[in-house]
Length: 545
Ligand SMILES: Cc1ncc(C[n+]2csc(CCOP(=O)(O)OP(=O)(O)O)c2C)c(N)n1
Ligand SMILES: [Mg+2]
Image (cartoon, rainbow, N blue to C red; front, side, top):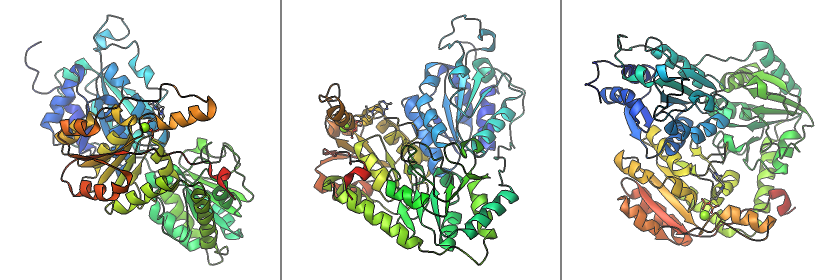
């Protein structure tokens, strides 16, 4: 390799810019083309959390941003490194989470000439453009800081989402005369709703005989949970949450109808109201019972992304930031309000769903969830992989605070759970974290036990070992009669954990509570493996009554 690098290189500008934008942490995996950035990170005050694969780093970046509301810088290198981050970026896109992926590229004079550089992709950015909210190609150190600020702003501006920024290696490793970056403004553009839209929605609400609220992930992204609660209490309106909105409203609140949002009873409660206020939820296939949901009254949709309003159901639109919109509605409501039997309506829905789930005879699953709930220290984050218990959790696990639940519900990416939990821990060092994964999914990221050790990321891991891809076995049994390719040879999990220097226990389901207590008392990462065969719930509308 050539002589020592120049005093200042383009990569230093990346780290300086991230710091100027307010980042405290970057996540990723180094590569030859990206080393200029890493030399910048070395000199900076930023913490770098290095993962063992870019897939895991991308999931971690999602977890980081989802629990903190801050943009997560994800640093990867050209070609395969970049491609391996796609899964986490898809999850970020589908759940509106601000991940800023910064990636190296082959040298400028190699672009589109097919000279065969190592890691070369024919058109790297083309792999990302259809997926992310914004794709940026930085072609000069002179524009690097301002383009990063622009990317940062795009990621954070509601509707938030991931962005991709590629920078050729010769810019990153080449000398730069750009002075150290000290101030950069990447603050999101404000998206206040229009006054006339708020006036109209408030008038509809005041004139309604009843109101119900359906809260989605937009409430969490906008930090609008206090306004949501104030509005619900003011109106005495029941509140249901989508899976993405879990945590937006306290589960023990008398107005809370829960998050079993595939259940027609819950959807009837929303759709049957004189005015349904749907906030930060897009009424997609999963949140409308496959579009079978019906609105008998008026639908008011509060949404940052205008293209999602009225897509299936005619709606009165309040386009803008959810926090400002809910605050604006509250301000406008006068004395005459709809009758407030919301607590009764919420309690009815909760009781009926409870009865249906209890009628399925699945004691094991509900007991496991209750045990986890009672073992979690206050403020804990749970991170879930695509394992059977996670589907139960989406339906029935009480999330006791905003931004304390992460789950790859947007893309369904197996392997998310543990890396996602590590990212959450990196963002919230003061919060306990528990990741729950199956014996299949956990192997995507088992190597990240080393990351946890190396960076002191004290996240606990619970592996549910049912000997294979349990959920797929159920689908095979129900659809094809026979199972194939879904039984797995597993490692000796406790040996594997110990091999990474992570203290562990093998437990029976009855010992889960005590074992979780042990894990949370253990300093640093700790892991449990539990042999159990949870099964999926029946769709709740088929279960009973
Ligand atoms: C990236 C990716 N690959 C494949 C799948 C398909 N898939 C969904 S669940 C699942 C099985 C998960 O098995 P495990 O983690 O052991 O959980 P279990 O269902 O046994 O509880 C698979 C393979 C997926 N969702 N994502
Ligand atoms: Mg399994």
